[in-house]
Length: 61
Ligand SMILES: [Zn+2]
Image (cartoon, protein in one colour):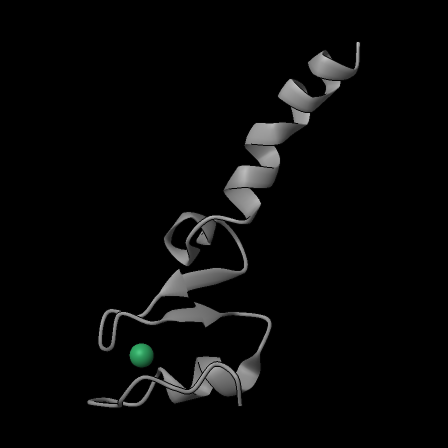
């Protein structure tokens, strides 16, 4: 039983912990200018990536 539960939840966990490119469903997208993942929930990132010719933003700041 435990083994089935693990198998059922494992793919979901793996997808959520995967690389950002797989998380562009609803709240993020890959910027065509700098190829960085932009979180739509963070307006600072959204505004930054709307600038023409910008550089990648430091995600940790
Ligand atoms: Zn960008």
